[in-house]
Image 1: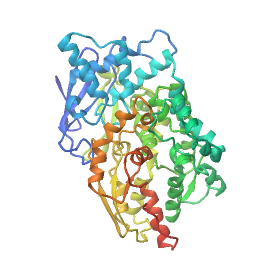
Image 2: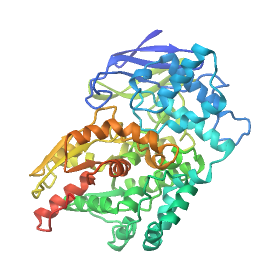
Image 3: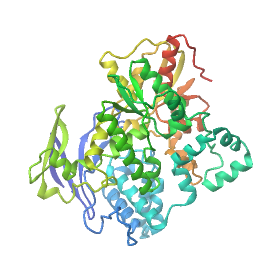
Image 4: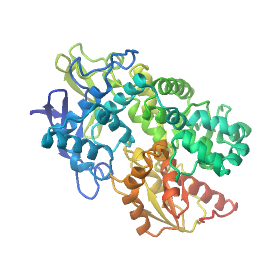
Length: 524
């Protein structure tokens, strides 16, 4: 194993049959990154599989693709490293199954079959908790190849395309909700969609957030100096519009003008199910819309941590290795400049191009989209909590909060933690008089929902089991209500717990309204 210095940290260059990757053997000090009940070592794969046989070009429609080979490379890489055997043992469904297959091969000589390999990506919720970005990238690549080769089951497509069915239902919400109250019809719908019998299909809001925003003229641009373009996402847009309305209320209470631009689904549900065409189309549409708003002076914000995870983390994956970016930062002909920080200051690590150009390149899931646009959006869009925290640090936040009584448990979701922005909402909620907040869950805790995956009949029970440790921790705090940024977590908590669930922005909005004499929120 070859030593390698990376901004003062000693990395080790490790190679096996199919991969070359860097391992950070130092301890990770950040409070919310790999710091659960016991400290863990951070591992970071910085590159892609090596070798022509291992790299499958997703952009070409080729019948000669073998998704099982892509997934096999994941099994080989993970078992060669072996760190996640214990790191992800309780917080993931994929790794325990993967290691059981490997152990069986070693002990009994029974090699993992094609069907067993193709089933592995279905256990990945893309929570982002595993330490190797390329592992989850390759799992999605394998799943995408499988869908391109075998097609997507109708029921899976129904669950994955949240945008299509949400928009359809939003046109006639009363009719949809009336139908969802007829048990025989609901039974048929669940059977068609492959939904577990114990899962409740969410009802449609009487008015979607986007219809409300149009009626209130928030879909019009403004010339105000302090202004944001708000990306609400599908869940807040159609299923929980009260969260998106609360976001607008909080921002306007702080003198910020809100513009709700035309927007598509962030792309996470379809990406997770292997629908590459729909995902790339929607991501490209959002790229153009949001970057245009940014060029017009709008700050870009979103209230959904899953949307933020896709736009800030997944979207820029490998974009820094692109020729366009290397040209932009004026890299020398024989170097690759990788952005980073040294002693808290922005800078670059310079790698020898002749050594790394075969493995450090922009060939990931989103490589067909402009790399500079991907980087621009990932750097410009911020979580609303992070945006409000910035206002607070700049002493521009309205801190005239009304008293809001309540003993509540706060869970910072996986996709928020993986953006490495800390827990801004916890700090903001503590400013509200009368509110008692206790944070629950460690760095490796997950609700287990996985978006639409938790509704599946084949995934539901595993989803509940995966989230059970977190549910027990919440119950031990005996809260009056639960707070979380993630609306997917909200669906899971509502299903598994007896407490009402709120987004932090709903409470902040209510506190502002109480200060203005508009009433008190109900916790039951």
